[in-house]
Image (cartoon, rainbow, N blue to C red; front, side, top):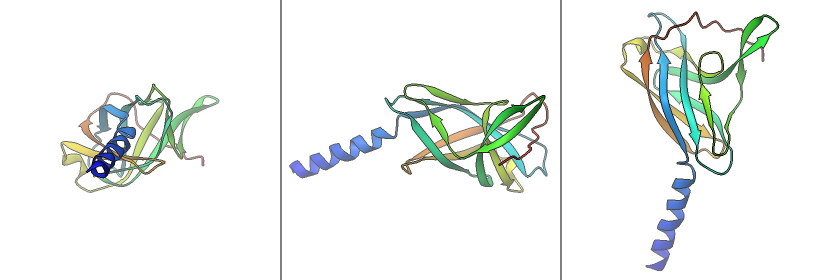
Length: 149
């Protein structure tokens, strides 16, 4: 019986260890039908006393998801893929237009008819975080990407 409770305590600690990320304001940019990629934004908060690094993500409407960052090169803004996103200890990382964001690539043919999009993030320890994002027509210009890897 003691082993049983020790096991529950152990697994309870494990599940809490990676539940220290919370996600808010998750939004996927709604574009006209026929588009093959779009952007997603979310605020990620970390209540842990250590940095948590996200290694990759996927979505219910695209074949792949990439982490991107908007950078200024002289007078031009460029989008650049980044391998990982680190959420600082007891801090947050805001994925937003003009900064870090997600690119959902090779969208399904009917993605724009969905009400919500399921996003799933994985940290470097392969812990999973599921998030529901709303589709939203967002103000702003076109989301052009110039890849420099």
